[in-house]
Amino acid sequence: MGVVTQIYDTPAAVPPTRLFKAMTLDFHNLFPKLVDSIHSIVFTQGNGGPGTIKKISTIEGGKTKYVLHRVDAIDEANFVYNFSIIEGTALVDTLEKVSFESQLVEGPNGGSIRKVRVQFFTKGDATLSEEELNANQAKIQGLVKLVEGYLLANPDY
Image (cartoon, rainbow, N blue to C red; front, top):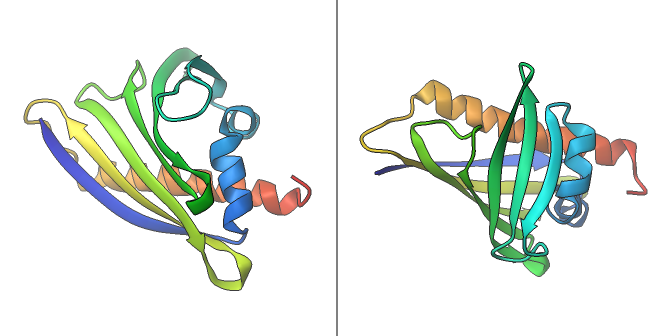
């Protein structure tokens, strides 16, 4: 098994408290409303703390797929949320799992910066191309921007 690490930051024009609530604490309620391909997010184990497993079901090209999302660590005071995608039909065959470590910090003008470290655990001698890594980063940053737009349009959320 190999490990490929990717590190990047995503700025957002909303404070860390609001972004953390939307992207972490209320993820299971908000994301199915915001992301068309997400059909449902169901807790299969736990109540949101470390060890919790959420089944995220998507519909892509008319086919239902899923991943299991395991909460590895959560620190509300420091806006830290670490999780792993540990299995599922939407997990690429060449990957054993994908682990995310994220923290929100204060950014300029009352906004925030989402700092992310992703580790892709590959099966055997599989590798990830620069194109695949860039696509993953763009997808995750796009989700942050989607939530940012929702929060800006809904200041009472």
